[in-house]
Length: 537
Image 1 (cartoon, one colour):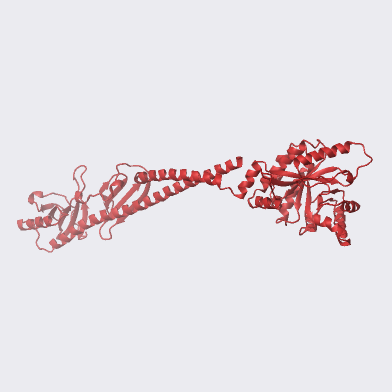
Image 2 (cartoon, rainbow, N blue to C red; image 1 turned 120 degrees about the horizontal axis):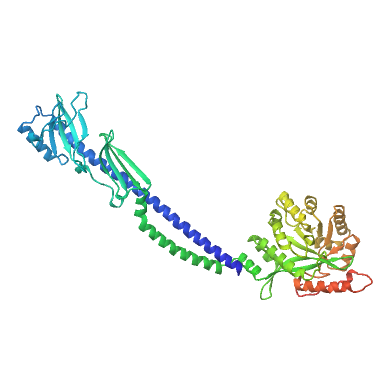
């Protein structure tokens, strides 16, 4: 239940994180789209401002060019009527006047009374035919007018005035105006007009500048990030609400999947939590004395209905779902707790565990051994860790390092299944092995004539030369015991003595064997240990 709860929490946490990330991604996409739209809007707005100023000015220039074709322009009534008619026919111009060489306004379409000294600079003869300038003294807060000036002859100039209020428009869309800053200026830095933001401040996220190819106009528009926040606020709120809805759905779905869609790996974890995967122990017998000197611990899965899941079914599943560490730790903990009650403290009793090949490539097994056995009455020197010869070791250098760490604790390393694997002799020379376990196939070969005998005998002699202990597995008949003892093997396990037993049965067997050893006898023999019959066999 605890592991299932962890799975539910992990699934729901994953759903929550996924929802948050999705919501943030949508916010980022929304902000990117709003920024893109604002940038496009500012460019269009800048083009509109520039187009309006350019059109008005170009209209005034075209009109003055047309009027300049008339000779003898002066301030007579006829010409003033001409000025007035031209001004009325052009929507951009409110006044047309005549300026003398000294820059003084001589007259306008409104009459001689419009005379004004110093309206323009004194004509210097080197100026352009068309010039632009901004009027002065329009009054506080007023927008300057644009003076479009056309030289006629002898320093005299026609002047058309384009009112600034006609040009001063705000083409930026309504929801952006509170945050935009816009400016129309003439070359040289003279500002025609400026549109200030109603809510200044914030970080500038876009600045657009466009200029005319024909006239000395430039438009600049910038906007702050406050605009993005304000424009997208409603949409962001909707996204947040949708995020909460999606999050709630995702959490519910995650809970359902975590609770109801168990994988084989989940079932193994539940079995571990429920104590269904338990240690079975097969005695290791001293062939000289008949005493039980240790045991090999094997994992068995017993379902609540009493059915046993074969190891060849759930062990591969544990490997596939990367749960071998959990299985190993659980089996070691159960074994420690069960044996501490029956093995006297200080008495050397060997307990062998099988390691998966990949565990020799990860030093976490060393930490696990320390965590389980650090304070146990069974010291590290009581432990044997078996490495199967059936599965090749992928990284021998790394395996040697992990094995050396295990041996440094005081535990022993056994090479298991020798005779059934692929490279037993190579592993014997590559790994620091303390014990060689003869596979049942080798033990059975003792009954196959001289060849089997010589093969087993050769391996035993090699182990003796390497100062390696030998344990025979799969001993089923007494004749095998006799032959093994003759060859110097002093430890064995097999159905002749007992099959793998539930830990409770093994502990009872150990108590009975200890009582028999304490009884007076002429001498202990292997026959003194009677074969055990059990339903688990």
